[in-house]
Image 1 (tube, rainbow, N blue to C red):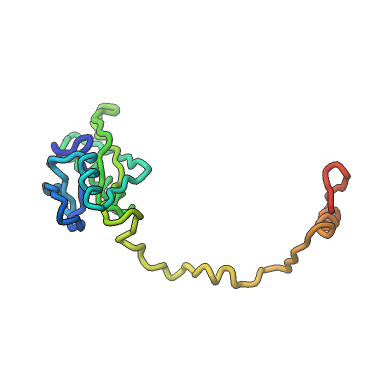
Image 2 (spheres, one colour; image 1 turned 180 degrees about the vertical axis):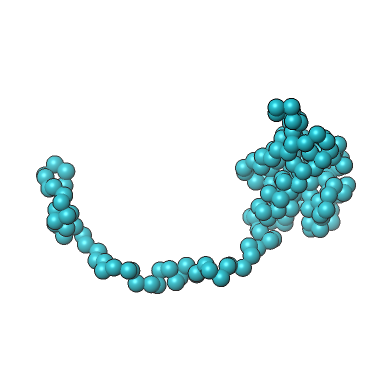
Length: 180
Protein backbone atom coordinates (compact mmCIF):
# COMPACT_ATOMS: atom_id res chain seq x y z
CA UNK A 1 0.00 0.00 0.00
CA UNK A 2 2.48 2.68 1.12
CA UNK A 3 5.24 1.38 -1.13
CA UNK A 4 3.10 2.60 -4.05
CA UNK A 5 3.35 6.20 -2.77
CA UNK A 6 6.16 7.90 -4.68
CA UNK A 7 6.71 11.02 -6.76
CA UNK A 8 4.12 11.06 -9.52
CA UNK A 9 1.52 8.97 -7.67
CA UNK A 10 -2.02 10.20 -8.37
CA UNK A 11 -4.75 9.43 -5.86
CA UNK A 12 -8.44 9.63 -6.78
CA UNK A 13 -11.39 10.02 -4.45
CA UNK A 14 -13.64 6.94 -4.59
CA UNK A 15 -16.95 7.66 -6.33
CA UNK A 16 -15.52 10.36 -8.60
CA UNK A 17 -17.52 10.49 -11.82
CA UNK A 18 -15.34 9.67 -14.79
CA UNK A 19 -16.23 9.47 -18.49
CA UNK A 20 -17.05 5.96 -19.66
CA UNK A 21 -14.47 6.24 -22.45
CA UNK A 22 -11.70 6.83 -19.91
CA UNK A 23 -10.05 3.56 -18.91
CA UNK A 24 -8.44 4.14 -15.52
CA UNK A 25 -7.12 1.31 -13.36
CA UNK A 26 -7.15 2.01 -9.64
CA UNK A 27 -6.03 0.19 -6.56
CA UNK A 28 -7.50 0.84 -3.11
CA UNK A 29 -5.28 2.99 -0.90
CA UNK A 30 -7.24 4.14 2.14
CA UNK A 31 -10.79 4.85 3.22
CA UNK A 32 -12.36 6.73 0.34
CA UNK A 33 -9.26 7.04 -1.85
CA UNK A 34 -7.52 4.88 -4.47
CA UNK A 35 -4.34 5.38 -6.42
CA UNK A 36 -4.22 5.27 -10.20
CA UNK A 37 -1.99 2.50 -11.53
CA UNK A 38 -0.29 2.15 -14.91
CA UNK A 39 -0.67 5.84 -15.71
CA UNK A 40 1.35 8.99 -15.00
CA UNK A 41 -0.29 12.34 -14.40
CA UNK A 42 0.70 13.46 -17.91
CA UNK A 43 -0.87 10.36 -19.47
CA UNK A 44 -3.97 10.82 -17.31
CA UNK A 45 -4.24 14.46 -18.36
CA UNK A 46 -3.99 13.52 -22.05
CA UNK A 47 -6.61 10.78 -21.65
CA UNK A 48 -9.01 13.05 -19.75
CA UNK A 49 -8.70 15.86 -22.30
CA UNK A 50 -9.15 13.47 -25.22
CA UNK A 51 -12.70 12.73 -24.03
CA UNK A 52 -13.54 16.42 -23.48
CA UNK A 53 -13.04 16.55 -19.72
CA UNK A 54 -10.49 18.54 -17.70
CA UNK A 55 -7.89 17.53 -15.14
CA UNK A 56 -7.24 20.71 -13.16
CA UNK A 57 -3.85 21.34 -11.57
CA UNK A 58 -4.36 23.64 -8.60
CA UNK A 59 -1.69 26.20 -7.79
CA UNK A 60 -0.14 26.07 -4.36
CA UNK A 61 1.77 23.18 -2.93
CA UNK A 62 0.57 21.18 0.05
CA UNK A 63 3.49 20.45 2.39
CA UNK A 64 3.25 17.85 5.14
CA UNK A 65 5.72 16.14 7.42
CA UNK A 66 5.23 13.15 9.65
CA UNK A 67 7.62 11.78 12.29
CA UNK A 68 7.97 8.24 13.61
CA UNK A 69 10.10 5.13 13.53
CA UNK A 70 7.87 3.04 11.24
CA UNK A 71 8.26 4.14 7.60
CA UNK A 72 4.88 2.79 6.47
CA UNK A 73 2.87 4.51 9.20
CA UNK A 74 4.87 7.72 8.80
CA UNK A 75 4.10 7.87 5.07
CA UNK A 76 0.45 6.94 5.62
CA UNK A 77 0.06 9.79 8.16
CA UNK A 78 1.66 12.27 5.75
CA UNK A 79 -0.65 11.15 2.94
CA UNK A 80 -3.67 11.41 5.27
CA UNK A 81 -2.75 15.04 5.98
CA UNK A 82 -2.54 15.72 2.23
CA UNK A 83 -5.91 14.04 1.67
CA UNK A 84 -7.48 16.29 4.32
CA UNK A 85 -6.05 19.39 2.63
CA UNK A 86 -7.26 18.27 -0.81
CA UNK A 87 -10.71 17.59 0.59
CA UNK A 88 -10.80 21.13 2.02
CA UNK A 89 -9.90 22.40 -1.49
CA UNK A 90 -13.01 20.56 -2.79
CA UNK A 91 -10.93 18.52 -5.19
CA UNK A 92 -11.30 14.85 -6.08
CA UNK A 93 -7.72 14.04 -7.01
CA UNK A 94 -4.16 14.69 -5.83
CA UNK A 95 -0.66 14.24 -7.15
CA UNK A 96 2.45 13.59 -5.06
CA UNK A 97 5.16 15.92 -6.42
CA UNK A 98 7.95 15.39 -3.86
CA UNK A 99 8.78 12.75 -1.27
CA UNK A 100 11.72 12.90 1.10
CA UNK A 101 12.72 10.65 3.94
CA UNK A 102 15.22 11.86 6.50
CA UNK A 103 15.93 12.33 10.18
CA UNK A 104 15.91 15.32 12.49
CA UNK A 105 17.78 14.92 15.79
CA UNK A 106 17.69 11.17 15.25
CA UNK A 107 13.92 11.03 14.71
CA UNK A 108 12.99 9.75 11.21
CA UNK A 109 10.49 11.77 9.18
CA UNK A 110 8.73 11.66 5.85
CA UNK A 111 8.19 14.95 4.07
CA UNK A 112 5.56 15.07 1.35
CA UNK A 113 4.65 17.74 -1.20
CA UNK A 114 1.48 17.39 -3.26
CA UNK A 115 -0.87 19.36 -5.49
CA UNK A 116 -4.64 19.26 -5.51
CA UNK A 117 -6.05 18.00 -8.80
CA UNK A 118 -9.65 17.82 -9.95
CA UNK A 119 -11.28 15.81 -12.73
CA UNK A 120 -14.56 17.10 -14.16
CA UNK A 121 -16.47 17.73 -17.35
CA UNK A 122 -16.01 21.26 -18.67
CA UNK A 123 -13.30 23.88 -18.60
CA UNK A 124 -14.31 25.99 -15.58
CA UNK A 125 -13.83 24.67 -12.06
CA UNK A 126 -17.11 23.79 -10.39
CA UNK A 127 -17.12 23.09 -6.68
CA UNK A 128 -19.00 19.81 -6.20
CA UNK A 129 -18.88 20.23 -2.41
CA UNK A 130 -20.55 23.53 -1.47
CA UNK A 131 -19.52 25.33 1.70
CA UNK A 132 -21.56 24.51 4.80
CA UNK A 133 -24.44 26.80 5.74
CA UNK A 134 -23.51 30.13 7.32
CA UNK A 135 -23.14 30.15 11.05
CA UNK A 136 -25.84 31.81 13.11
CA UNK A 137 -23.57 34.60 14.34
CA UNK A 138 -22.63 35.75 10.83
CA UNK A 139 -24.82 38.37 9.20
CA UNK A 140 -25.61 38.74 5.52
CA UNK A 141 -23.56 41.40 3.74
CA UNK A 142 -26.67 43.45 2.94
CA UNK A 143 -27.27 44.06 6.64
CA UNK A 144 -23.78 45.46 7.08
CA UNK A 145 -24.36 48.11 4.43
CA UNK A 146 -27.99 48.94 5.21
CA UNK A 147 -27.24 50.15 8.73
CA UNK A 148 -26.77 53.87 9.36
CA UNK A 149 -23.30 54.95 10.45
CA UNK A 150 -22.73 55.26 14.19
CA UNK A 151 -21.78 58.95 14.17
CA UNK A 152 -22.74 62.00 12.11
CA UNK A 153 -20.97 61.76 8.76
CA UNK A 154 -20.94 64.14 5.82
CA UNK A 155 -19.12 63.86 2.51
CA UNK A 156 -17.31 67.05 1.48
CA UNK A 157 -15.36 67.96 -1.64
CA UNK A 158 -12.86 70.54 -2.90
CA UNK A 159 -12.61 73.80 -0.94
CA UNK A 160 -14.79 72.44 1.90
CA UNK A 161 -12.36 69.55 2.40
CA UNK A 162 -9.37 71.90 2.45
CA UNK A 163 -11.09 74.19 4.97
CA UNK A 164 -12.02 71.24 7.22
CA UNK A 165 -8.44 70.01 7.06
CA UNK A 166 -7.13 73.48 8.07
CA UNK A 167 -9.64 73.62 10.93
CA UNK A 168 -8.25 70.33 12.25
CA UNK A 169 -4.69 71.67 12.39
CA UNK A 170 -3.44 71.18 8.84
CA UNK A 171 -1.37 73.91 7.23
CA UNK A 172 -2.16 75.37 3.85
CA UNK A 173 0.48 76.43 1.39
CA UNK A 174 0.39 76.89 -2.35
CA UNK A 175 3.08 74.23 -2.91
CA UNK A 176 1.35 71.28 -1.26
CA UNK A 177 -2.36 72.02 -1.69
CA UNK A 178 -4.21 73.18 -4.76
CA UNK A 179 -7.97 73.42 -4.71
CA UNK A 180 -9.87 74.06 -7.90
